[in-house]
Image (cartoon, rainbow, N blue to C red; front, side, top):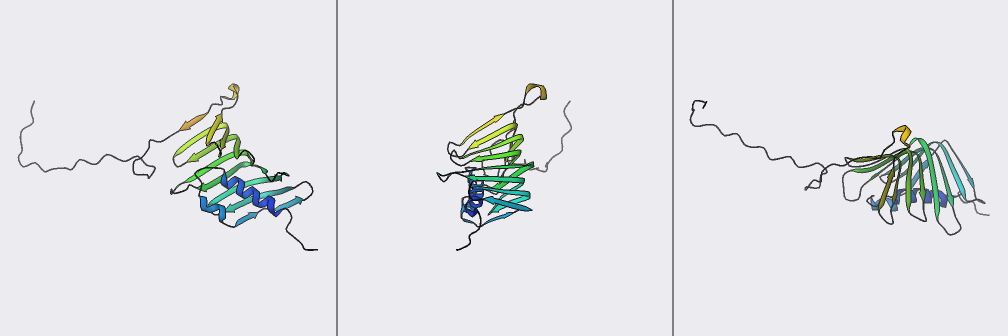
Length: 194
């Protein structure tokens, strides 16, 4: 009987699913090797569930996920769901064709493979370049390219907050500064006018 790594498909699914979620993510990452590290891992091949716990780090190319715990489940139709918990869970990946990163944070992050939906819960924050969106809940659907954000309850003062920088025409992400006015020496001095 040949031995195979337990639930290796589930681990692969976790990494690919979370890496593929942002539409602007580095496409080359999908073909890179996947590294998963944690203090412990358990897998149930019958239930198709893998659990990674304590100091979980998932790396694939420029994509990095850090969490306290990650559970991945694979379904009979081949789709996967993943849930990560942390204080906070952090997600970071280089944007395709840009020199900046997409970053996401939340106390819980869920990915639904069938819907290509990634959701950040509790103290959720998503950054792209210098733009940032905060709320109690933020989701992004990679299939439809639709963001949704919700604030917390009124008692906690929870509102959605977004900070968006003006577009730059040179593609650097930083607005172009006005050209400086050159100083010219005066060829004659004149008395100030009153």
